[in-house]
Structure formats: C-alpha cells, structure tokens
Image (cartoon, rainbow, N blue to C red; front, side):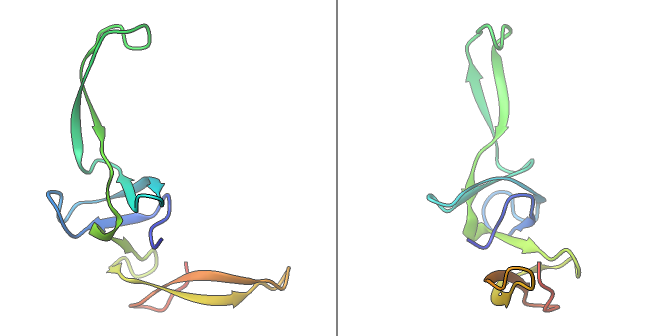
Length: 107
C-alpha cells in the first residue's frame, strides 16, 4: 500500500478534494485510510457511562486510498510513490523503500 500511518496526504477525489491531513489509521485489507479532519461524519450516540451526555458526535470516516496522494517530505509536493530495493548496511537484508517520483528522494 502506498500510504502509511503518519504520512501527510492530499485528497485528490471525492467531497474533500484539495484538503490535506495526516493519516491516522490504515486499513490495508479494505484499501482505506482515515485522514485527520477529512470526511467528517456525524454519529448519534446514546448516553452511557463513558459518554453521559450522549448527543451528536463528529468523527473521521475512512476514505479509499486511491483518493489520496502522499506529500513528499522533502519537496512538499503531492506525488505518486515509487518503490526501490535497498540493501541494509547493518543486516545485509534487502529492504523496500518508497521513492518520490518528483525529486527521487527516499522516504
């Protein structure tokens, strides 16, 4: 999956087009992500011990991962993500790194 937790992403499709936010949670089995302050839904909750007031709560709902683009930490542009294989110097094992398609920076 091209999006990881704590990535900054730009929404490129849907109702929240143009909004940026940090990825809070990733659901790889459904190919969906929860982005901070994007796709806010209202949930009517009953009063309980945990929430004695009850009422209407607002929370982020998941959006499809294909509707977001990762923002490169170096060039600060929304980019497609490439992958490259790098040999780890300490363990000698191959590791897959993500690469910015604009500036070729690994992250």
